[in-house]
Length: 85
Image 1 (tube, rainbow, N blue to C red):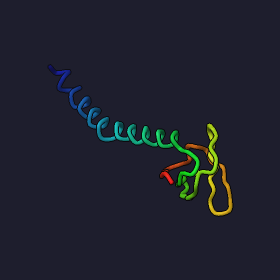
Image 2: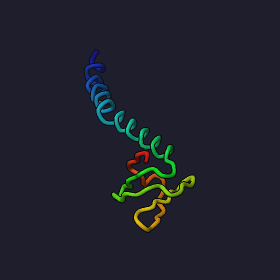
Image 3: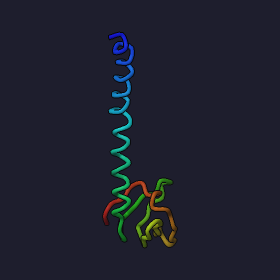
């Protein structure tokens, strides 16, 4: 009984920490990975650095983005948002 009263609050704090911080972060990360894996040519994207452009070509790990007259190569993980064209 004494052990339960000393360990109980610790378990409760871990459960609250899990449901308020860890689980939502895992859901966001999973949705971002899904979005990055579904990218295709012609999608409008925004990089982590804030650059807006259109997907010009896709490789397994890299993506070429056309912005204006220039084409820039980024890692797939550098894409923050995407919308179908």
